[in-house]
Length: 424
Image (tube, rainbow, N blue to C red; front, top):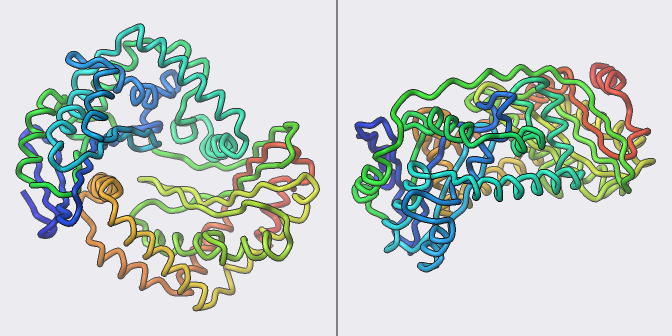
């Protein structure tokens, strides 16, 4: 056992399962979650969407509980239960009053170790997921990001949609879910995190009891991501064209991770950012424009999203590209200070949420193999200089771009023209 701080304690059970807790004495609640280091990038093409399907099915009944009983037991104590699927992680979590912690540990352990995947429930949930895919396809400012991801990482797990493809979901058998869960939901691949008004030793005892049947074999490694970039366009009869322009970026732990985060913030991270001020406030070309970073274990993406009118796109893209060129040579201390303040405030505010803290603790262990002290993170943010931000911008914006455009995109420049302008 190691103890990163007085409030944060870490135990690795003999089974290999990691349990981490943070005591927050001034709250009356506890959040507890199981974070599995497997998601979309761990799937084969033939099983794309199995992580998300499995996340849905985990709530549809166990050997001891029906789907209705899972919901009823949690809500009978005023608790909340949910889950999510991402490219590198699937999470199952509860938030409840501190006196109901044992129930939360019981239910999360039950759904991860004793889910039955009843055929009738699976067929109903298959229909729900197909409706979810249909809804995403009908939401252009949502689905454009799937096209962007697939164009950046073509024909590989990192590029496939988290929801899965309709044909694969329709044909996915029960055995696919059971096999995937058996191979990826293991003690070596899972962190159970809890935060709130709790006692660490009691949490460990509950997890040891309720997760005793979690498989102990090592989980298969994910396929490395291979960024390629390129262009995707789909003409649709829409009022706006939805554009995502992006570049290969840095992984968690890369020396340029924090400079890149601050670059994204000052470029397109708020109302004072360059893109918002120049493109929305001064020119009125968009309602929504922002930049984002999407780091992964072995790489990442930096992107800019904008939704604009058909004719406005002809002005929007060149102005955006000029901002990407300018930030490589001209950053001032005032805007860097604003970006630092935004990033630090977001980090520190998140520490007040038990659910956010669980997620952070689990992710840090899975990415870095340790709990990263908040002070260390703040120090790295404070240490970023103007030269660091400019270097990060030059490193990314001179790489081969990825463009995804959905809607009336006739006035969006072609990818070679974009790349040429950025290289000039």
